[in-house]
Length: 269
Length: 86
Image (cartoon, rainbow over all chains, first blue to last red; front, side):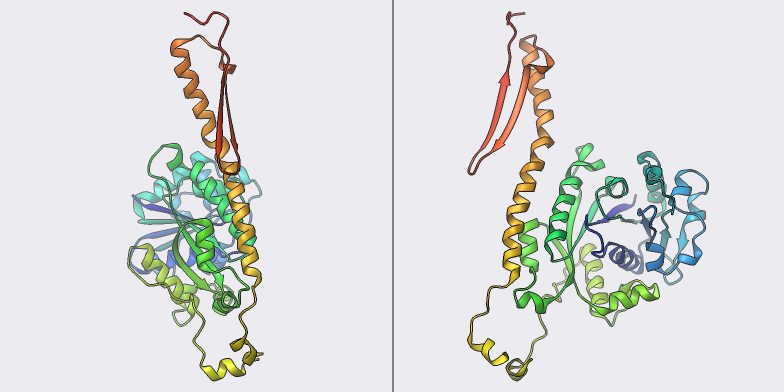
């Protein structure tokens, strides 16, 4: 029986796909059989971030419509044996993801995987609600910025009411906060909401903080999940997050500015 | 600039404004949300209980929820039929 994790946010462009790719790769590297599923029907992107866009033959909707079986559609990652990608369809019919169809595919994936990471589209439309409906855990990706925080709060409301767990009255979805594009310098200058501010507003368990980093763009340029860039701050931050998700006690990093000496403070611009 | 920073207290940045606005907004959004989520079920169950004792119409029970500064008001209105005995 797999654990189903939805990566969600409400607002677009906050780092859902980057996070889905990194978390899935991280879980797989730890030896867990992991499938990462792109729910963004119409605008598929996960395959690009994972670097397998040229290997897409069949997609999620083909499997739902029984035009292909799951094994034909799943793409095995070339860097990690226990990681598979299920790409989204480019069909414009958003209703192609039926609740029955998605449920059936996730059930079948559940038989052979330990974790299923669902990369949600932005918004609160059909694709987003389908991505979260079957979830056991939710990672709410948030930027320290007003519209993103507000949208995250709205997603929490939807997670609490429109999910399988809510409807069947079992233990609710475990929700985690992941703060991305964080800039400790700007927080120190009072220009950006701090982790503590966002946590206070959303009252969520903090899974971690990803610092604003050039490595995220260069990783996506190359089609490499940023977690594989272990030299980079963002890569290391995602590494921490995977370990923390799996229950390890890892202290939070990347919350503070690099310590500057007295003289560099005295003479800075 | 760097030298001045050491001696002057840091000015209040825009982040604190963002936080205040969000706290108000999120609290408001949450009351809006809390309204429809349990009220229909509450209404249905109250109706069931009343129907154990009195034959009433489906529309006989209305439930209203309001929130004021420091208190929440749950208003319950039951219209009993002319002959209230079975």
